[in-house]
Length: 240
Ligand SMILES: NC(=O)c1ccc[n+]([C@@H]2O[C@H](COP(=O)([O-])OP(=O)(O)OC[C@H]3O[C@@H](n4cnc5c(N)ncnc54)[C@H](OP(=O)(O)O)[C@@H]3O)[C@@H](O)[C@H]2O)c1
Image (cartoon, rainbow, N blue to C red; front, side, top):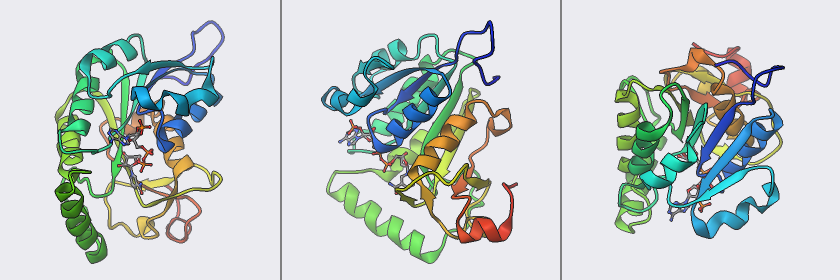
């Protein structure tokens, strides 16, 4: 997929699924800055959070795991940026991923967000701190019926198993702040380049949007870290 617009070509049409969240709104900003046409999907009660983009994007209100909502929103799209949010205990992230996989146009670039805890090939190496945090926080959140981390695991398993043109971007711990530039990445958590475990949310969004036009990321699950973090600076350029 080339980075349009080029004279004579229509601009890329991109759908942001989960557009009203923090990551989603940054992705909308980056996509608009590139001249893309943007369609945003968000829950009806969150439409107001997109007021700042009024008249510049098309908003499709609805649950992101509703196949009919997604089918409408992704029509004619060249790319789909999906925030996988494991909210509740009813398979919301899985339903969202499946709806995108089922309804996005065949050649569309599909880019999904998740966290470092997702592993594609089991070769990621996690710190004891992260393993304990996932075990404790994950169980507590599920017990409270707030979040089900296994839902995001299942969502990503389905993406990994699909023959669509997907990328799964695995975010480190996030922070707010001005952009520092495109994060660096590695195939595996545990690589020294990722040790700082910190990325600006605005740059996580930048990586997602850049992935739309980077075919080298098709069928990759990059784990990212801020390009100005100590580990990124110490260990050099983007991996692998
Ligand atoms: N937070 C972190 O430290 C962190 C670290 C690594 C990776 N990530 C990944 O980054 C992505 C974005 O995470 P974020 O923390 O920055 O959150 P976010 O961008 O604010 O996104 C949260 C999303 O979940 C939706 N949501 C919130 N409550 C919901 C509910 N009860 N039912 C259904 N949907 C609900 C929001 O929609 P509304 O606008 O409608 O509420 C929004 O689309 C996720 O894929 C996450 O796994 C996050």
